Amino acid sequence: MPEVSSDVAAANTEKYLIFTILGKFYTFPSRFISEVTAFDHVYPLPLLPNYVRGIINRYAVPFALIDIGLLIRETATPESKVVVLKETVDKLAFLIDDVVDIIDIPVSSLLQVSQGAEQGDGSDIIEASFEWHDTHVFVLGVRQIINRVKADFEL
Amino acid sequence: MRYFLCPVEQFFLGVPEDAVAAIMIYSEGVTKTVSRYEGGDTFFSLPHFFGLADRTVRHGIILKSSKPGASQNNGAASEPEEGARNILLVSSVEREADVPPEEIYSLPELLLASGHLSFFTGIAFERSLMIALIDPAALIAQIFRMQGEPV
Image 1: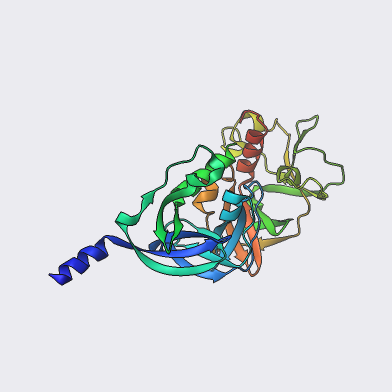
Image 2: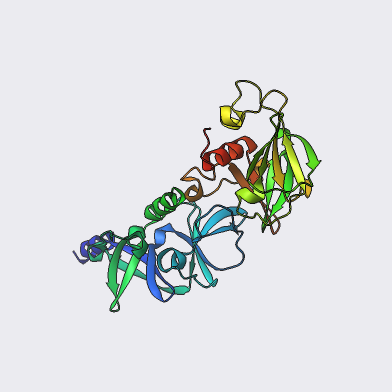
């Protein structure tokens, strides 16, 4: 029976990569992530919202580099490290300060984030949150980020 | 496929050679994105369209005329009159390059979601250089769209 219990527990948890952006804690499910790498170079493209910093070259494949600091707090994230998502999710990468940890989170611990009245509060790109070491960790939503960029294009 | 490469800030715009009739030297001043002249020639200043209006325009890329009924230019507003030409004004045409199809990757879905950048047909890297390939007809259609003109 103990084996059954641990299997059930594993089935109800998901692994998350926790990282900081401008000192705040964010995360993606680790199954979305291809790699974490040092920032190298970004090629700005015209006509983009300022928080889409441009294109980065990952093994000759173009990924869009998103600055969540600029998107949510209108403050540029230092060009330190980059979280790169799997190509199957979308060719997206995110500037981060650093990786903090990789942890298993029970699905039951995830709190849905209600949409704020103001787009600028960032809640429109947050899928959920959870408590970890007495702090809030925000789960970034890939689909929500794509929708945000689309909406900003249409302004 | 061969492309004319035009520097734009930190990357090169790649204009497919098979869409180009000729390259011209351009020495007139440019004050806006779209300029129409008698005879029907229409000049599209890419530095202005890309928000880089302070860049000097040195070359014009004269596009091949679209055939009646063809999808190029995507409609009446961008369809040149008989004998008229669509000309892309660029800072310069620096060189030509072969870009093998297997080295061309689509833009991330995020950047294509709104349709604003759908004139970029792909991205290729040549060592440390990035080449953003365009469909000139789709670019002209998007310029008209963003200028509020019918497409």
